[in-house]
Length: 290
Ligand code: SF4
Image 1: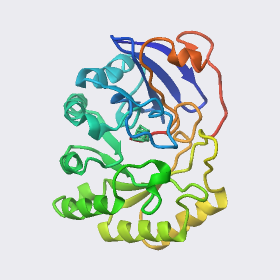
Image 2 (image 1 turned 45 degrees about the vertical axis):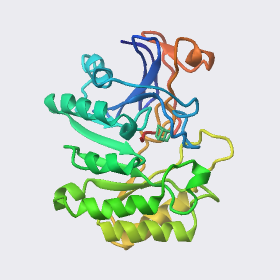
Image 3 (image 1 turned 60 degrees about the horizontal axis):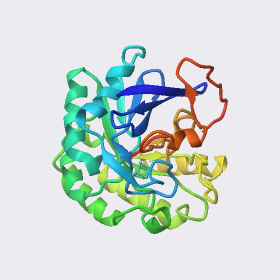
Image 4 (image 1 turned 135 degrees about the vertical axis):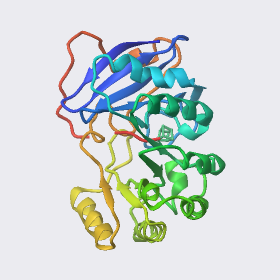
């Protein structure tokens, strides 16, 4: 396993990781202290707004392959936090993710996880892991099919209702519902009200994401609407976690990571720069989740 290519912007550095069977995943260093790692080669969920799942799932990463993304890069980067938010749905490879979390924790790292929350049975176990944060990609209650999100968001809320009761106030505060409003799809008043209702009832935060424009035909809400949503959620006493510029960077931003099986797929797209070669600066403003 080795890092073959990297691509840099003014905010993030994206690394292409080639595995021993020549399949590839990407990981990203951002915010000066955090490494976003991948857990699968591809992803079977296939959310419409995300590049990672567009070719489907090739295979799961082993615990060692998940951990080694950190181990290789820690030699040159000051990594203190791990975001399990790269390519793949962590709950679909949970046993290996669980083992990797143990390896990260042994190194004293803070670990957070991003997931769609399904299968729900696995989510119940994931909520008990020693994580600094767990963000659930809910995005919609009413129009999930258009985003290709699997599973019923109300069933997800029901599981949270049962499981969060068992957690301490401190651990509960680490749970967040992710909402990425897209124009004409999940930006309705009804959707906003559902997020307010459940965040208040469950006493969790909302991670309000800005869309990283990657897919033709999908458009995020504009700046004014985004600010209005922040004001509204805060006015309801809800803690809001905002979409940082690192997550919205075109290099390594939310939904931008890809995976490929065998050499050649990514190169055809002409996306990467050779390690050690000239790296392009991108000032673009516009990343990560499971
Ligand atoms: S957002 Fe996450 S779950 Fe959805 S396709 Fe991308 S990697 Fe898979």
